[in-house]
Length: 363
Image 1 (cartoon, one colour):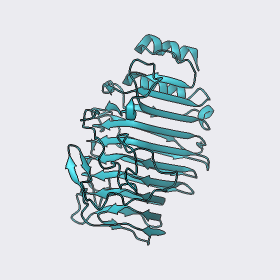
Image 2: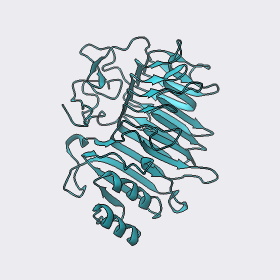
Image 3: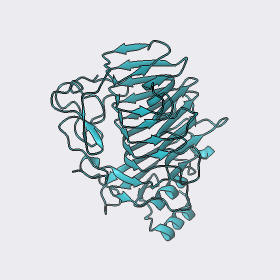
């Protein structure tokens, strides 16, 4: 790790140099970007651990909480960014159930990862245990999102976004989550809640979630709850392009500006597989490659604070598929054990567990 960069962090924002060069303990928003800059140019695997706290909004002169454009030295390394580390332990111990770290974005972009051709990303990035709230375009970008992954990749590339809660993003020009990977590898959005996003700009389709796995890449959506978003055009909840598999998701109760709109839309030529999802409405130009145990229509769940949960007797409980690609997550988005009864519940919240509210902490 660059000694000058560590010294700069120490002087500017109280950064404590890690015992191992591969781990950086992050205690505030300013440290997050500086730690990502180090991780993107040191030529080694890195882990950024965020304390389980409510992080202040990014400063007025920055565009996002985190921007990651790795240098050539880091195109084949791994990066893990995880929240939920106990305060005061130098990130050596996780909180019970890995409490989500809250990033209050206050109108700024959340996390943006980008590798453009001819450069090719061959490594892996994992982000988990984070709560991203109130993203927008106040940072000055036309296309702002809570989470953006735009990567030209090789076959070994891997991106996993796991246990995220993305709420109340609001932007004229984009959705809440945009993931585009070309050239090879996999990208996954898993165990996450995306809700209460609003797009406004007319003339272009802006769903809440847009997943594009192109030219040999493979995308996965597994055990997500996507609800109460407002899209632009005919796509309310999720748009997919290329090769994308969906398992155990609930995509419902979203709306859009068009009178006729769909919860799930696939672009022409897409190869879509659907297993054990509840999707209120869908528009698929080609029949899915796999279409097993999926349901449609009004979802059998109810509001509880910012979330929709499965009530006793809901048909969405104990009705998922227990062996999705990559395996079943051990816990739901809030750290409660998965498959509490027999089969996993659909969506991001396993029934009977505690939920969190907008401050990022349990009720």
